[in-house]
Amino acid sequence: MASPDVTEVVELRSRFGFLALHGGELEVMTDVIAGRAAAAAGASYYAVVHPEHERHHLASTRYDPAESPALQRFLDHVEVVLSVHGYGRAGRWLDLLAGGANRALAAHLARHLGPALPGYAVVTDLEAIPPGLRGLHADNPVNRPPNTGVQLELPPRVRGLSPASPPPGPDGVSPVVHALVAALAATAVSWPLNEYDDA
Image 1 (tube, rainbow, N blue to C red):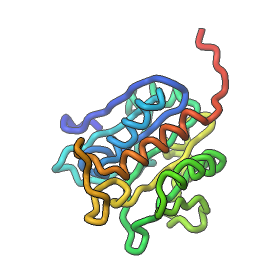
Image 2 (image 1 turned 30 degrees about the vertical axis):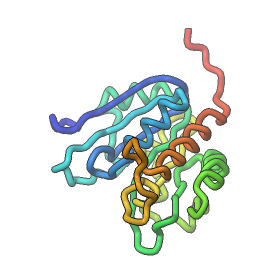
Image 3 (image 1 turned 30 degrees about the horizontal axis):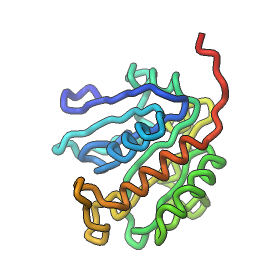
Image 4 (image 1 turned 90 degrees about the horizontal axis):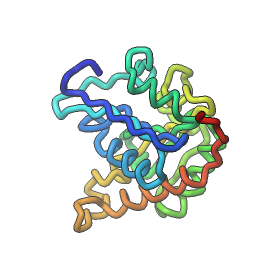
């Protein structure tokens, strides 16, 4: 994050937060999806936007708030998070993987994504998620807020990046991305947050 070509974005709104640690050209569209969902839901948002030439995929556990005031500010503000990632595995082009420590939020998320994305499978069974994509490590930012969160791994097709994705609409974005963003926003809006005294 010290690289001048890497940009951190932080927007503080509600206590529900969206993360995109590998945004920009690293895990393409993840920052766009998380950012649009956060804006639609009035939720908070933190992203690391990587430039086109950046190919160093830093593990999520290496994103240390002690080294990033912006990330620390975000984590201090939110109660629960949904961290958006991209992945690609042969034979799993239709699987959305919902890992992370907050299993109640994972189930809540699946109830919104399922109807919005027919033909896709939302996997919440941790045993059915590859170990490296489960997002359970305590140092992962998804698990640092008080009520932890969900790490959502998205295949290329649902990010509008595959030849099998629905073609882009007039705005240049695939309809499947719009459906995904709307479902993520609905997830955030309908999730019960604790009351805080901000005084």
